[in-house]
Length: 441
Image (cartoon, rainbow, N blue to C red; front, side, top):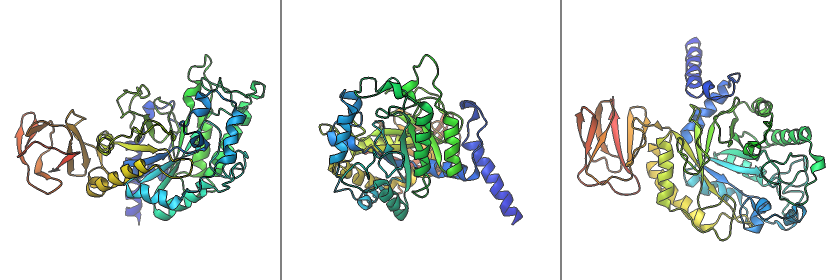
């Protein structure tokens, strides 16, 4: 018993060292619990999740920012709730399709910037049960089905609010009609948020993470805005110690956060302009849309190809990160047919090749023009996605015991050189992801 306890303590200490980064936090006063450290490892091993942006904004079919972008009256916008009747919503079908795609968790938008809550909250009657003819708590149904099918559930939660008068207006929401600026009351709004978070972490079983968004709404304030994040993070960790906290603030991680989020970019890249922050040692996640928008938009049918999505998943894994891939359900509650097809095709790939990304870390070779590498123990997976040659030099120090094509186990010839290990192929690697497995020592 003592040996087992000592081993557990050593494992926790190792994971704590691996998944914390005090140097990149505002302070180092946050010490995650053993349950939280274990949850970080589970999260880091997952590699693939599905983001779901769904709310009454889907009624307008103009994306999730319609209230902000259309410059309309918040009260007129709210009338959409009275017609929101997603009669084709089926939590069992949603979860089954996402699980079959190979995703290990779902991140669902519990409340977006428009203030509408997708569960039966007691903090506001502006929610899917009290304000719609549908009258069903979709988060309850989704949570029950996730627990039943063994897939983790995370909640997106908006820090900013375009409709509640208590919220201090930031860089967005200024053009929305109907806001009463005389009613701004941050303490009341902060209490409201924490009350809702308490509901989400009390009434819906085990929750994998809270995914915050909106901090950037006040990043340009002349006087730094105090979101009181640490107290909020501590509340979450008190309610569910294993629940991870992430914040899409586009900054280096703050104290109390358990994962680092990148928007529309792989860690270390900044093509979209949101992700110039330094990469921490926390578990990493990048979120990206399947088409162009997060929420449902009728005219946005420019879906990324299955090949593009698979390669993005593999590229994220090559950087030690998860891919949180977004879908925007229709107002009737159905996931768009094209999105379902993409999920199905990704599932066909993950069933065959998921072993080369799940439970892996970033490989020995940094991202290259030809592809990436991932590692699991003594197994190094070489993911070749763009190589116009029959030879490939890997700048690695490890010794290779054997090398073979992952697909059919055909032997790949290798040669040790001063620069590393060279692989020789009978033909140029082709396909979505040509995988070579090296057994190393």
